[in-house]
Image 1 (tube, rainbow, N blue to C red):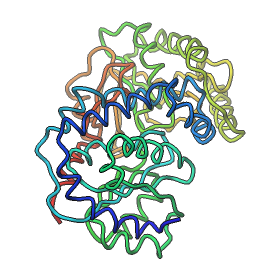
Image 2: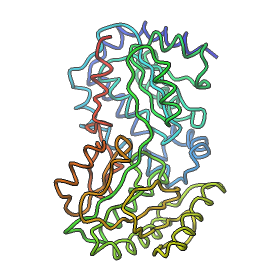
Image 3: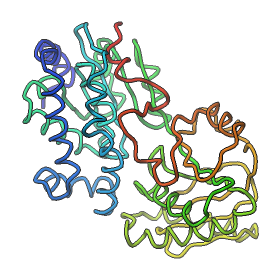
Image 4: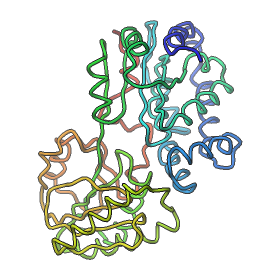
Length: 387
C-alpha cells in the first residue's frame, strides 16, 4: 500500500493537467459518474452496495434515499453553476479532507468545490466507512484520467504521527468532518489553515399557518433520512402550543407509515436501549408519547422547552413553544431548521445566532444542493485561497 504522504506529494504533479480541463469537460465527467452512483441499478452501485450496506447499517431503501438526498442537488445546472465560479487554486500543493464515518457520500459536498477550484485533494476515509469515496474517485478517474491523478483517498488510523505530521505540515488546507474528539485533535495537530465541521444536529419548527398533517409528513422524512445520523437530522421540533398535540400524533403516524416505505436499517442493543430509556423516562414524567417498534420511531410530547439530543432510531421530542426557544446551550451545535408555517423574525434571528446555516421547508431539509454553504463556509474559495 502506498504511503498517504507519498500519495499526497504525487498530487502536485497533476496541477497542470487539472488546470487545463475545461468546465464543460469536467461537468460531463461529474454528471455521468454521479448519475451512476445515484442509480441503484448501475454497475457501479451494484458493485458498491454490499459493502456500503454493511458499513452504514442502512436498509437498501434508506441508503438509496440518503444518497439521493446528498447527491441529486449536485447534478446538472447546480453543478455547472458551481464549476463556473471564478475561484481557482493558483499555487502548487494539496489539501487534506478528513471524512466522517457517516453519512455515506459526504465526500461529494467537498469534492465538487475542490473540482471547481482545481484544487488537488487527498481524502482520508473513515475506517468505519471506507468504501464510497474510493469507488467514486475511481469512477471519475475512469471518465477523465486527469482527475484520477489529482484526487486520491487513503485510510489510516487517526492520530498516527508518522502519517499525519508530514501531511499537516505540507497541506495548504485541512478540512475536517467528525466528532468533537476527532475535530479537536486535528485542530491541535494542524500547523496551517484548517476548516472544521464538528458534530451538529437539526431541529424543526411548526408555527402559525402550518397544516399538522402536511408538516408531519415532511418532518418524518427529515427525521428518517440516514436513520437520524446526519447533521441535518431532526432531533427536536418546536410546535405552536395549540397544534402541538395534533402534530405529535400526526408525526407518529407518519413515521410509522414511513417505516414501511423507508425501512430502518440494522440496530444494536445500545441503540435500542437508548430508546427504551427515553420511553421509560416519558412514562415516569407523565408525558404523552407514541411509538410501536423501537426502530420505527418514537414521538415524545415534551414539557421542557430545552433541547436534548435524541437517542436515535427516529426518536424525536416535540416542544410546545410559541416564541423564541432557549438556545444558549446549543450555540454552534445546530445545523438546520425544517420549517412548517411562519417563523417569527425574533425566532429566526435566534436560530441564526445559534449557528443554523440551513432553513428549508419540512421534508426538504436534508435535500441539499450545490448552493448550500455548510456553516456558511465557501469551500471553493477556501480551496483556492493562497497560503
